[in-house]
Image (tube, rainbow, N blue to C red):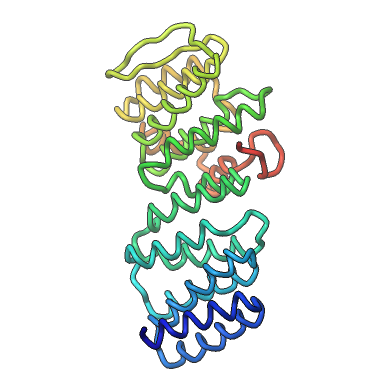
Length: 306
């Protein structure tokens, strides 16, 4: 057994005897290791300690060590390797919804992984989005799901369907429209279509049979007389795929813009169809992001997504 393995074993035993004392002991040891630039040892001890504290349901102390681990990753300029990322995401998945330090951990996690690209690491965004959904915060979840990996469109659709189902008085298009517009805004019409298709499958399985179906470019489109804006969203995505300005203008003539979508559509019109707003607003991006990330039911973020 190496010296470090021995320290980890002793620290774990101390945590199980007295979580508070064990937590303080680990912090003292890690402080010394960081001062000596023994970053690998610090990472091993913090990860093991945080994992054990989560097992002991000492989430406050576990969160503290988890945040410290992110600080060490950044101080050591640790790469976002598969091993380091696995450690970080394992701890993320251990945070209970009631633990107040979870958002600070997420902030540090994203700060560390931002070095992988202008929008950060897609796997990390996916995991963060899924956890926010599990914590009952869909508005925060979608900020990350839209930047996540290939698994996100289906998960995002399920989350929005559950949200729409819990708000039966609302037009379902208001919910799936959030994903469609955000995916278009980040330049991912394929993800917009995948998310919309999954949502419509769930919608049909819930007993909402379409009045008719038709196919465009090999894509099946269910049409609803009672929910015209579901039809609109399909046609919008297909028009964006083609950058088909003529089709989009015909949509404008048939479907009045929903007030909730006006700011986002102004940006979509510019990017995909070359239509510039007559009186462009200097803060249009800020306004559209604000409107997109607002609860369509008018309440707070928290909702039972099960």
